[in-house]
Length: 272
Image 1 (cartoon, rainbow, N blue to C red):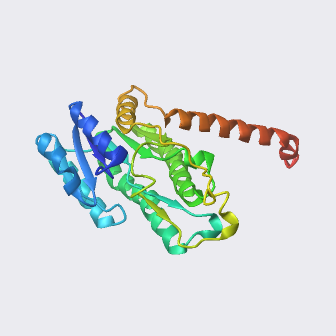
Image 2 (cartoon, rainbow, N blue to C red; image 1 turned 90 degrees about the vertical axis):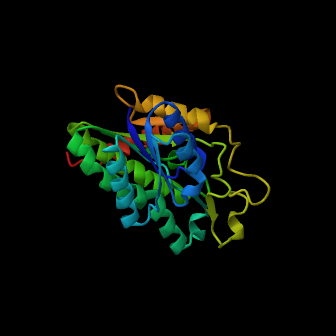
Image 3 (spheres, one colour; image 1 turned 135 degrees about the vertical axis):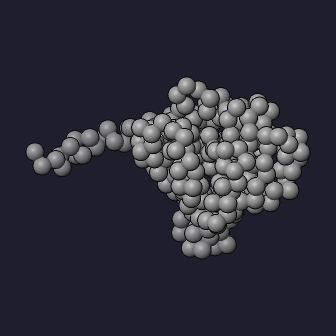
């Protein structure tokens, strides 16, 4: 039995993961700004489920949630940074305050949780940090620049964190979902109040859209995350959905092709 702390557990992938982990016999600290949406999980699993209010942008709230988990279950084995939301805007349309809020939730929130959970994990000599990113960090669709940037920042941090904590017995896994059947494009999305007509077509405001169908099933994603987390050596990167896998390969091929075209120019800048 392991103890999981999952942020953003009131809906979507976070809730599906909390339910699946509990059904598999593990302990879950399910967190959300409004815990009423997860009271049913606590009622269904009174011995192994705990609902804790958490605003990932509030440092005191973050520390209180981690302390509550460690007091109830004696530690956190798996931290899942899932809480987040989207923001649609051409880069030129980005609103400074909205972008700051986006980064506060999607990047600095996970950082705060990681820093709060690490002392206990280091003391016990084991633990897994799962950072839910997005294939959007890789395929960078029009209108998703700020969201992609926040997720890319989380992935960059994850890579360095992994190298810092693996010698201590800890693991870090990044999860890149594709498009799943959740509220991500609805309730969990924000949109710039600035609209520049020149971007209407490329952002899909003129009848076409850069976004494809939502094919992913959250319950299947939850099962995949648990299976990967329980592997003897969890993957550094877990892609979820055929669209995420296809996007990964397309982005990698495109980058390799462009780098290859200018390989000699890149090498020409060496001093000797």
